[in-house]
Amino acid sequence: MAEKGQTNNGKDMTVGRPAKLIFLFAVPLMLGNMFQQIYTLVDALIVSRLIGVNALAAVGSGDWYTYMILVLVQAAAQGFSIKVAQYYGAGDYDRMRNVFARSVRLSILITIVLFLAAEGAIPFVLHFLNTPSAIRYDAALYIRTLFLGIPFMMLYNMTASMLRAVGDSRSPLVGIAIASAGNIVLDLLFVAVFHWGLFGAAFATALSELSSGLFCLWALRRIPILRIHRKDFRGSAEMDVRLLQLAMPLVLSNMLICIGGLIVASVENTFGVEYVAGYTATNKLYSVLEMAAISYGFAMVTYVGQNYGAGDAARIRRGYRDAVIIALATSALITAVCLFAGKDIISLFITDTEKNASAFYVASLYLKILSIPLSVLYILHVTRNTLTGLGDTLSPMISGFVEFVIRAVMAIAVTKVIGSISIMLAEPFSWAGADVVLIFALTRQRRRLKRLEERRAGR
Image (spheres, helix red, strand yellow):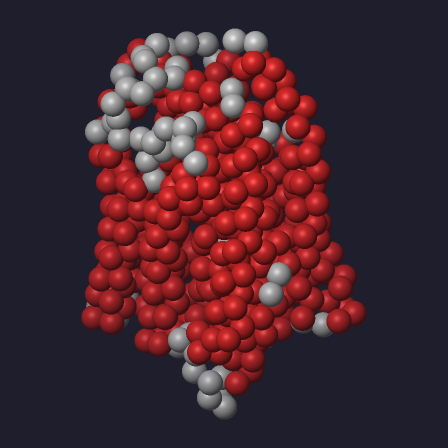
């Protein structure tokens, strides 16, 4: 076992002020998420401005499906990184490298299965989503091309999650910034110059993901304690089982959340192309609204994982409290911006003209419905990832099931009573339901933290 404090490019989060550590760790993640959203927004802007509203609707009709594949990849990578963070906090670098090596092997297997399943399911998903016939071909073309980047998506998320586990949140930022810049250039080249349409927009995104993954792979090789060799792949299958036990509940949780979203989308698509276009415009912004929450969540996985490995329950409790305060302040600021400048933001995607009046109204209303209860979403991310850092991935899975049920009920049943607005209300209602489950689960974890304190005191 190497001595704790060995020179590396990571960050030890077991010492120092929790609020400062969490916030400063989250800032590069926020910027990285911002760059990641930039190339999603650029796709939407270029598609809507250069190809048309129907093309934007085609992109948006499969949003939940493409998002599901992304979060499944993220969930697997995050689940594998939990033990890496815990062993890093404990200073057990030999076991940490063994976990990393086994995670690489499992990630390759998951990538192959996911790629084949995702590509093969496209026709069935679009049929299930009630995608309008006028945009179904374009939607299939866009999604199929986008999924060529699934291996690159896994490469980036796997390497980025391992970097974050040892406290390096800057390298993933640089990687995603490179990808974002490349995507913008390729988008303009493929769509505006080569006139490749939706294929060009999707192909640009797939290629840009490769660059971010390669950069993070290079960054990993520069960290001595994360350099794995053939011997690190040895050992029993017990660790593989444990890694899958941590990752699979997160994967299932995200799958359930997204299946609920797919059900919502299947009903949403029945309200016509203009409704879909307006809903899509705000859904693109949803990713921006959630950006800081996701960053605080990733920060908590690393912070809690390292401190759990170090056996410091008091720091875990203090870190959670500080993270909640930061999250509430951030969400309040974003809500204010959306309420005061919402129409100006929407106009970037949909011009407020008579032709687009219906789509503009839908987008503006949906933005208000998402932004007012935004604090509920931020508490969800902080709490869910605190539990994940502790190694409890079952509770997030249960919360994902609750989100699934609420979205499905709102889409299938409540729309018959109050109409299309139920589709918009499904999001905040599902956040609230998940929060109830997660906060209850965190309360139950107090016993576990108490035992951790007792072991630490008995040293």
